[in-house]
Length: 207
Image 1 (cartoon, rainbow, N blue to C red):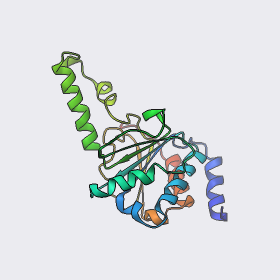
Image 2 (spheres, rainbow, N blue to C red):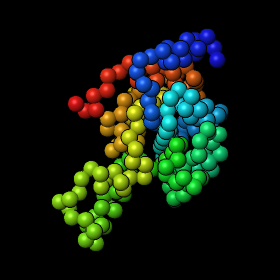
Image 3 (cartoon, helix red, strand yellow):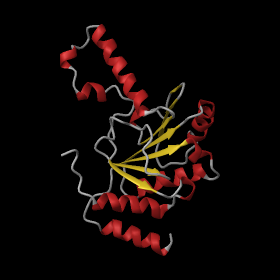
C-alpha cells in the first residue's frame, strides 16, 4: 500500500461515521473485456470487505448477449473472500449452497427493468391464482420477488456520471458515487475515496 493509500485508509479508520455495509459495483461488458479487468474486480471485492462491507453486489450490463456466457464463466472464478452467486441471461443457478444469500452477488445482463418486470409478472400470476388480493399488495410483496432484494448503501459507477439499468427498486435510497476513472484504472485509492465520500454524507433516505 502506497503512502497516499495509507493516508486514505487512516482517514477511513478514524472517521466517526460507519462505512457502507452493502456496496454495489456497476460495470459494463466493455469494462470486463479489458486486460486485467477480472483481477481488478477481485481486488475491489476484497477492498469492500476490508473496509467494512459485509455484502457486495456486482451488476454487469451486457449489450451483446453472445458474450454473456463467457462473462458468467469468468465471474464464477472470481477470487473473492466470500461465496458467490451468479445470475445472468439463461442462467438460473448459483455457485454456492447459500443461494442468493451469498455475501457476493453478481448479475450479468439482467437489468433493473427486467428484474422489476419479472416481479410484477409473478405478482400478477399470484393474483390470478387467488393467492393474494390486489388490495393487499405492498412494497414487501414486490421486494420479496426480486432476485436480490437487499438495498445497497453505496453504488459505485466508474467512467461516467451515468447509471446503467441497475437495481432500480433496490437503489432508490442508495448513495451514488461516480468516478471519472475507468474500470481498468480503478485502484484501492479510488475505492477509499468512494467510501470516505459516503462517510462524509448525511443520508436522508428520501426525506
